Image (cartoon, rainbow, N blue to C red; front, side):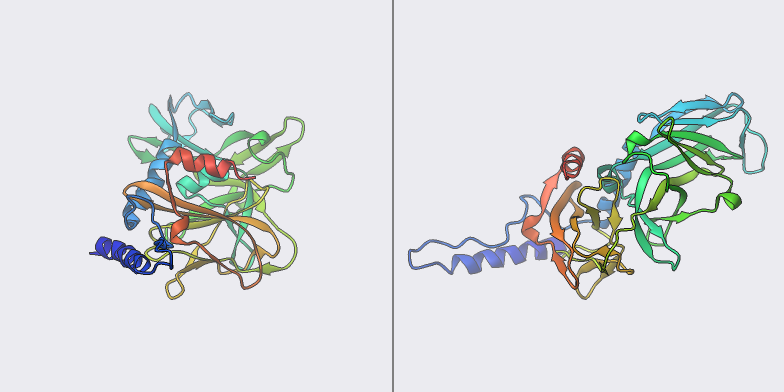
Length: 331
């Protein structure tokens, strides 16, 4: 029934415009022309697309726990886990075959596809955009069961991101109740690790104790007056079947996320008001249709009380590769 109602609106609009022609008898085309073959989005299908993208980005390597591993990622990260430094749920030292899972993000295109934005928790509990030097997921399992370690380390080439930044610190990722990843800066003294920028080698040296999501970050900290970012989306789309991201022009290692959705206004926004007034930004809307990606990208200059509107006729269909290329091409 929802699918029928979705198309009924376009059918009625077409009838209206066909019946209204000018004196020359020229038919005025409808103002809304949906993507051919597009159907109403499915929250489950949209989530599955994100999980499929994440799976494609996952690197795996088997090794012997008693031998440890020195693993080099596709982007040149070197991860070291020492021999006999893996433990099961009973704190017993693990031996035998184990499997490493490793995911790395440096660019906003991959983060959009897998829904891994960069929003850090600030001192008052609000969320602000982060600049990343690398976002990672690291896990080791045996027979599908997660293991723990006392420590491990990585060297991360700074050329993978925006270059070496001495202000970077270490953050850990936790999932909120709505399933979105949020980043919390940790205290190296309490949590056993940290990140140390090395100017001589142009690398970040990372020491960590826990597996899971970790991130080399700092707050974007854009100066000047701030305003809320508000994006109105087409009918039929909400925070369950679509996502809205914001990135600043010229900053490829920043990806903000609008985590609040207002049902009454059909708008995405954020609850802190971190948007820098006067900045040139790209708003990236992503959803799905029949298992394929639907997207729209708008370049905007943020103003106070500005409502950014994504219209139905802006939506386009794309493969993962096509959308990634489009986002990577943004200046």
